[in-house]
Amino acid sequence: MRPQKASNLGSVARVARNFGLRTLSVVEPGVVPDEESSRLAAGADDVLASIRRFASLEEAVAEFPVVVTTSSLRGRGRARALELAELGGFLADAGGDAPAAFVFGPERSGLTEEELSHASACLRLPTAADFPTMNLSHAVAVVLATTRALPAAPARGTLAEPAEPWAPAAEIEAAIAHWDEALEAIDFYDTGHRDRSLRDWRRLMAGRPMTMREVAILRGVANRILVSLKRFRF
Image 1: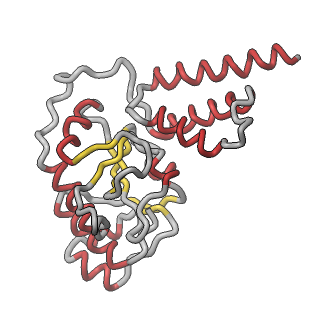
Image 2: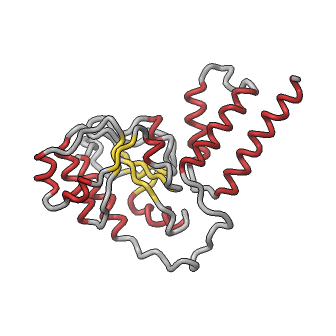
């Protein structure tokens, strides 16, 4: 998210290449690779060249059913908190081979509360309380090294697979928008705290991987509320 130093792009590209990744996504506004980033990539120029750029976090993670944000700060956001030792169990519970996106914040400020609300879980990096903020590439290295050390995913079919495909984040966002419309229609936001309430609602829905059928059920309920209100009023 919004990297502030081109040099960090090079360092992250090298780390990604170390652990077998061939592409990165950057959410704008973000710096672009330069000579320094190419030098620090040290042979991972193919990763730098393949960086995908998105205008928002929603677009960047749209295809992923599992979204894991990262933070060294305790108490920020209300998504399910994971310690590094819990990451493997969480990913296994999510379906083993369900695609996962790991989201890292800007070097100085980290992720905002709004950005954290999009997470299935928030991975807490075990840094010292008096010096919690890590360099971006170091944080990426810790997370990728942890995932690399996890047991290999079982062959397809050895885990109980959902009856329907996992819903990507874009489908969950669409369901949240549908419910936002329904909640607005029943004056749920009459206290004037729509943004905060919507973040909480997003955490409830994005807090675990969902199947396409589960998303369809939730959207069906929201749609029924809207249809019933129209009948009542007209």
